[in-house]
Length: 92
Image (cartoon, rainbow, N blue to C red; front, side, top):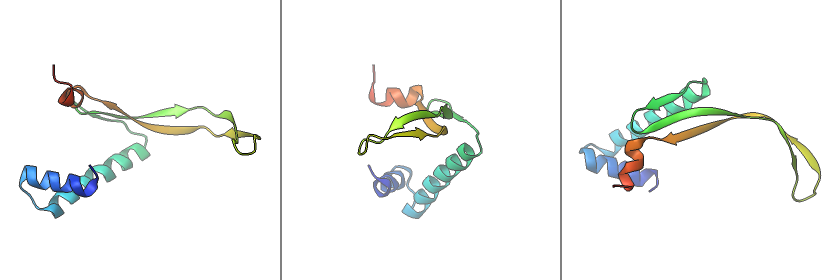
């Protein structure tokens, strides 16, 4: 499901306009991006957790030229699925 299909799904499910549904999605995603950018973690009970994981610097190799190169350390955003979201498709 892409963004426009998701907007239609939300609008139909919650009986609102597509413009309102798009504003909700855009507000949520921009807020998550902003919070993660500030180094904050987000925990939504039952849905999941947005966290940041530090990836150490390492040596790599260019597959085209086989020359060695250094890959800099960076912060990797991660999402861990919550129980309600996990159980939505895996009903017992």
